[in-house]
Image 1 (tube, rainbow, N blue to C red):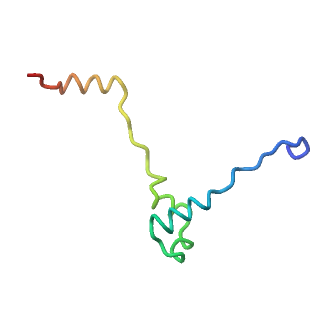
Image 2 (cartoon, one colour; image 1 turned 30 degrees about the vertical axis):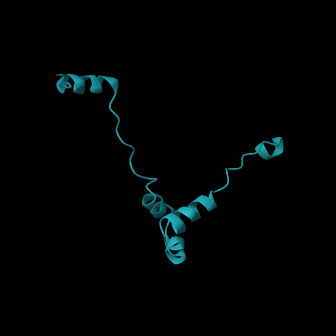
Image 3 (tube, rainbow, N blue to C red; image 1 turned 120 degrees about the vertical axis):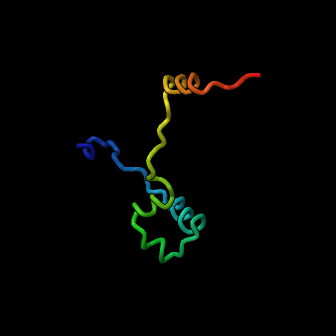
Length: 73
């Protein structure tokens, strides 16, 4: 048991200050609208839950450079 061993398994504190600032100041939500949002809705509104961009690897970049070379004069 962790509690008996003295190990702390506490999760980090929720960043209320940052979330409140983002919702009330940056997004300019009313307090009523802010507190009515679900965490998922707030995450989407803040852009935190969008899919990550696909980044091409070195092979794909090399193929693109060969297919579309820079024109040198």
